[in-house]
Length: 247
Image 1 (tube, rainbow, N blue to C red):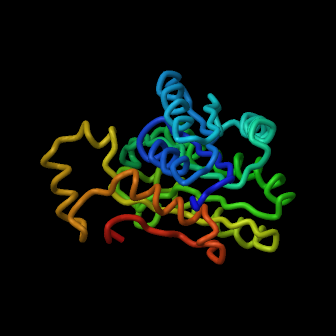
Image 2 (image 1 turned 135 degrees about the vertical axis):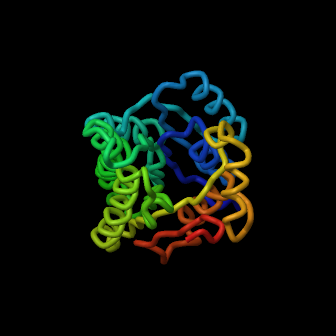
């Protein structure tokens, strides 16, 4: 028996990195996958085909969750296409790193809007169908930076810490309807983005991690499968650090 058999998941920002890893792992565990992307049409088509090959229903939606109405529309479209929304993974995010002295107002607003407001928008869009079903699992992607802070990332840290407070509140509000809300806080995860960095720098980061390696998208995806499945049926309002012991 696959852990996510017959469940439908919405995953935001799934064409690369962590989001892509989650989408593939969910499909392998039997979930039907609706995923969003912002601009990479070719990558989205490729992912859709790859997911369908795993024997599940899958569809990519070009959608910007940072826009309230777009999130509402996405949830309605997914409900129409898939018949239910059992899992929401709010994964899409951006960085605009700079020291506070140099962060522009726009760089602050944009990061809060894409990383935090989108979580509000999509959660609000899915809770009605989840309440009707009397079940649902919401998984929000924070970061070790949201827990520990990081110089040069005040905007990103604020957005990721906000996700933790938001998720705990949702857990308290919706627990009586059997809707769970949890957070995953990844540490240093090696993706296409980190592949562009200087190898010596990356090795230095690896050496500072108790498990002596960077994480993979699969490491995050495994934790997501657990929180999305009935195995974690009595877990809500929690933040799970997946960081090799950094925190």
